[in-house]
Length: 173
Image 1 (spheres, rainbow, N blue to C red):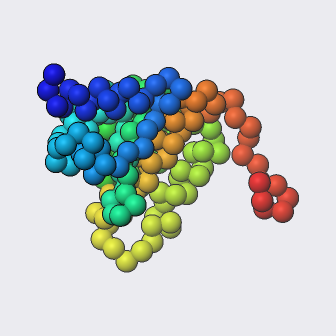
Image 2 (cartoon, helix red, strand yellow):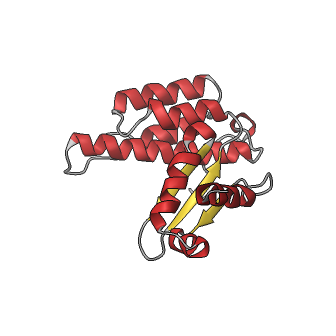
């Protein structure tokens, strides 16, 4: 068995029905398998893609990690949205249309839609950076929110069944 196959198998063994996401440290994994961290990157990039039903989140630096999330419920819709429809950048109008579509298809609640619209709005992103950077930031924020919703849906808390989003009287939920 090739090293890439062994690494893939090891990670997939960690991803079970009970644990559909796993957090790893790239360097520790490379050390465990006696390979370069780039080998781990290769396996993640080729065997844990959005088309295969996985979302990879990573944080670089000393406390960095790689989180692999298996998307199940509404998986093909979310895989398409995260991987292709949003892409590396997305404009505010296009993002708003996408959010409206998700709400119309009952994949997100109206409260989630409102929060998403607020988070990607030009008002929220009114910082002195080029529009292209704002669109890239908007895409990353939207992908993170969709990943979170997909994770919650996978855990059996379908959006349509959640309690309405109503703030309490004192502003604390």
